[in-house]
Length: 604
Image (cartoon, rainbow, N blue to C red; front, side, top):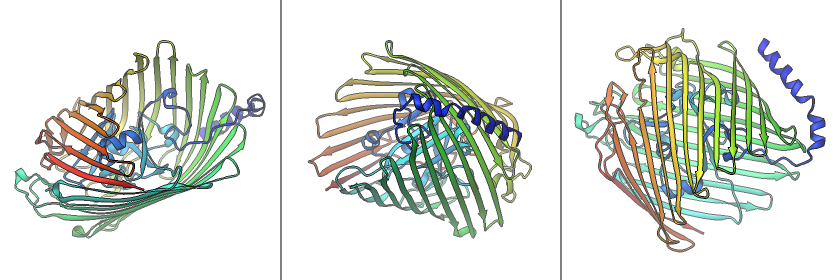
């Protein structure tokens, strides 16, 4: 508790000059936005490594699931086992899959039992944009944000109410139907969507090993965002998401030909309320709940995860150059596995303070600390310092950062019968990085490169075959280089490309599981006329250790087309794995060959 008192004392000292500073700065604060940085700072002014996937890019690429567009981003490797519904995990910058915090509209959706988030059931429905923060973000978000943060933000209703009906069908007897409606009525806005996806799929276990049955998938997703403005600058939202999925899988490895079934039901609810208290003080309270129920009838097993969170955030404009974020988070997490007869409850508190300095959009400095108080583990103090220098004349941006983080063991790590270790200690980590961005050709061309280095102490890693017991290995290191290019060649053609080199190894210099050394993506977008839009993407991943062995590298090519007939009708088509590459994500498990899909969208 000594460090808690330190935070409170520092906070009081910082707050002393607020009144005087506010008198000097009468400019009205912008409304607090739901962003992964907890601020409304523009993307180009951020000193952290960030990628924003826009609504325009989402529409152009036509991915059915979020995991597929994440696969194309800097610093990320996605591993999917089998067809639609197969477990899909994200590894960011060499960190464990449990070390990436995933949020949907500010709701933390990581499963408490496994620690990670399974992207296999997350459709692209009603999503407005995706923010990706790479590197340790524990200062603002706590224990699960060691690799980074993925914040998914749903659409907010705007303008005259409009409605849409969409259909897509294609390979593996896959069909998807979507209904959506959004708009504004006086001071009330809404955005609603409902979709149903079904697919016969293919065998999760590799057909080359003799497994030939299809593993099917069915998904129902409902998404809602209702908002109302009040008292000039106040706002309250009700955000809800419901998903029910049924999918078949092969649990006993690559030779399994008897499908098992998993039934997942989840929903999340958030009620954020925000209001300006004064001209220099904005406040936001976000009360939210996430629930997940996974049932495995074959094994007579049922896994429940619940997360209750209350977050009280204050954004303070201290002067023309200084601002701060001050907040308190209280969270209750619990999980249980009824088939294996164990359950666990954990309560945590987080007090966070971050100061931001911005000198005329040319010099930026951010420093923050967070005290984490946990009912089951020792308290943890984390901190972060980062800065950036921007030259508007030359179009150059240089940034640097240093941060610390930690991650507590998952419930399965501690209690799963036969595959657990109750003596595990929390992981601790520290990261530093340097980045450089350069704009050229009147800002039409942007080049970027960054180097990161993360050290882990007591990294939690499976002992592997045959015991698969989680252990605190002495240490591990992940270092890498991320580079990208964005080039608006003409008014109707643009090119984006990125490459990530990542070396993640333990103390014996052995590569960590599912961390490829190289990933790269190149995308060419071309508008033939005002009606025909086309995208072609090439995505590469080097070989890696995955499952019980090593899988080779692979290069995938996909393309998407859309044709706007008129203001109401649009036709869509896309092709996946156009070179019909035969590859594996995990040893002995199947992947899709060449496949195609087509559909339409009607808006009225």
